[in-house]
Image (tube, rainbow, N blue to C red):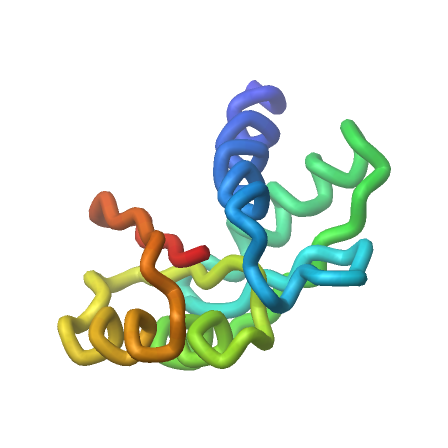
Length: 110
């Protein structure tokens, strides 16, 4: 049962291989976003730390906050409990993020 959250978090962190700007020169992954998902993501981060020794900082603030932080390069991963808005996609593309994944309920930018 514990392996499932670790695998799901590993898949999310696989997006980091796309070289997001916030992770450059940093050892800690920054995850920001949905208050609805913050406890779940925190438990994934703890399991990921136990399995790999790599730290993950998880903060809430809301889906919009996480998406904005990702677009601004202040987060490596944004978690969202809602679909991403077309204007957020447009802004991300304008700021150079042309690669993103969206599968409701999961959306991720790189």
